[in-house]
Image 1 (cartoon, rainbow, N blue to C red):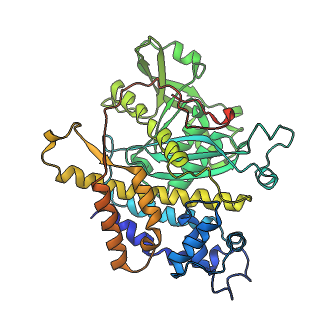
Image 2: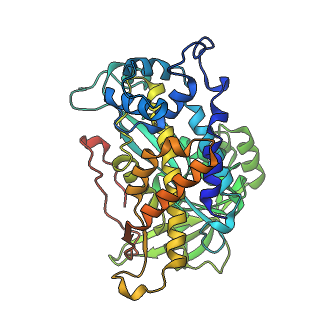
Image 3: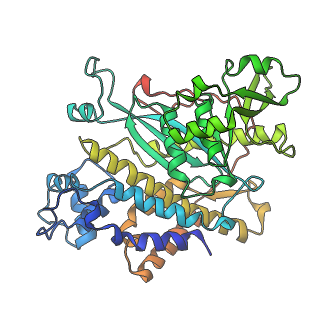
Length: 443
């Protein structure tokens, strides 16, 4: 059974989320016939232009079949202020849960899901209301420094789904986001069969303990200063070290359950992997995967897969135009962001099934320049946005027709899969930010 089958079931149930649970004001949506709750909730992920009044007119034409309805952008904005963004988090969570109940459809590495956690800085509309809602310091030159927020995601790097996401004040640290992601995904995927990949910013004993407590696994690139004394005594490039968990450290943990877990463990057992780079430098990975069948080359390959999370941020910023937020209040920002995460996962599901069909049906590979091809994600996003109302309908026949149309078009617009250069020393990528403080260095 294809993943699109579960996707269509999820989208067909969209109206189940059109309920009082996601209305923040009891007196709204009672008498308004032109802008009912369903209309507003579908407009948010459908909205493509984000800033023009024409978008509202185009949407009303699709939703009601009438182009010149007397509906203003301001009226829609007022209704949006009472829609809880949690609705899009919940429907996306249900989609991810349904997909990961069918592991046979998903890619793994030696039986493990490979996931990565990382953060990025997103531009926000530079208005006083946004700066207030996101607690942005007013004692800076706002003509030069834009309003920004910290975005964090946990991504399945082999299947490209965004499993968990958050957008907050920039002052919220990446570690805090990471700890929350672990709690968020434990009901969605099997953490026992998951490897979580992290960069140097996440080399925290607290995060390692949190992952271990969930019986999951990590591969974390270490800073040069991390566990320096213990690593200096290593005689091999693949060795176990023991880090004492003293009482003073355990008391610093805010999570009482994690304190209890750390007290019971007493020692943090880490497998340290030293990887020699072509430049002559050495990068160090820490893991709790002690299986000797997992080699240094395996860990090098695992860590290189982390790059998918960087390309996902590129897609959010440059394909979905997520930073082109449509309002001046935090609730609108959150609606735009979490609905875009949902649309991203819809397009990823469609792309997954198209790629599977390409793999199964292509017989004569010699006439192609490249060995493998895949669906064009950019076109997938555009088609999903264009056909969103037909996909969100409970009419199964219309859903199926729309789905087949999207898949048929995507099969005609394939792009080659080029072989990646395997290295753990990548250069930072500029995703076209207008502000220098938004350029997040990564490799």
